[in-house]
Length: 530
Image 1 (tube, rainbow, N blue to C red):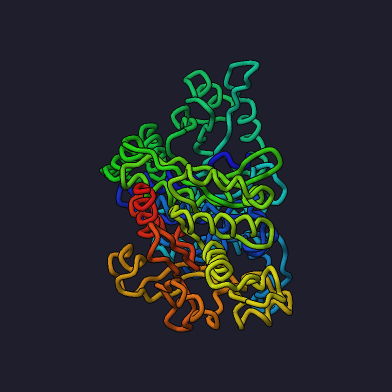
Image 2 (tube, rainbow, N blue to C red):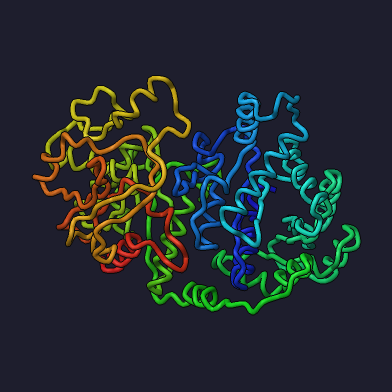
């Protein structure tokens, strides 16, 4: 089922192989007609993760990068829409030599070509391929067919892992294997027999249930891997897989010798997770986490992980709470609750819903010296609030919200205007890694260990309007980072504040559990001094 942990399982398999010195890369296949994830609703699909080369991808690419500690690119992500588009473009260019182009075999062959390209680019010993969705979904059949064809051609080079959920109904109190049996039967109908089953459940799977799955699914009992819920940290999962002997099963299946594994970095990380001496309470002000009566964290998963990385590195226990921006619009008196937080983050986003609430939160943090970290839209919100309150530009706004604003302190980039007129929204924003020059001695430069130039990933269409820079800086706003090619604002800060920093880029996308992002480190450090 969706959300059962396929992405983390894929990442953890990569981690246990990488710990043995193998080169690993990972590919996510999304069964959507969307060409990329950029136009998908975050509440529905989760966070859009941007690669360094500017591809808007599924959030699982973020997990791959964090677990494998390597940058991935466009070859590591594909959707149904991207595959079909590529095949159609090749047909238009006569690359099929005039032959009839058919869904089978040409779509599966395109998938296989892309997987081989990912292997070549990474010079990988192992390519881990995650097929999104579930085995019974119609839209996955072409990807399962590609997998079947690969196995048919090179059976010794392909193994199949099924991640399946084993429920424990409260009214019964017993772990049930029947859904997994049916999942395997459905997979068999696509011509695929799993070599390994990762048994996801609230609890560890016991021997009787391992035996039952092995018997009815025609498998070796040792290949049923227990994967219970781990509340403290997903970064314990590789250690759990190692205890279960998963790497040995994989290597044995490929006829490869095992190697000495180095899990010291993972063990140190897990120790930090459990050894936090002091709590730090961080509020995230957003609007993408409500889905009916449920709260979903996936829309801000990279932000959440970046907070955790920085806290663990400083032996702190992060307490993260969701703050609905719309509540601060309805009832400004609620703003007083912000004083109970050690720090506030306003993350990225789009649109007008909740913007005045975010502006009110930003003003409260600025005036009451609460550490504030604005990410992308959070920087723009901070500039609007400063322009209105400090510079006296009462109706300052972003033209994204008010096209007729008298003071467009945030405006659409010039090259974007023509795209918007033509309704060209997909993959048309400022995307991927861009350079940023830092002002020596600034808070940002100190966080980056006095670096003069950095590179960070972007995903936005609107920028600080440089026509208002003089008015803003004369009143005390510091521009501590700019793009050297365009002069566009990348980082703003306030010097007379415990921590008030906004970035036009998304620093959370480059934070890793072993190497936390420097700006998140500085923000958490300032939050503990409150």
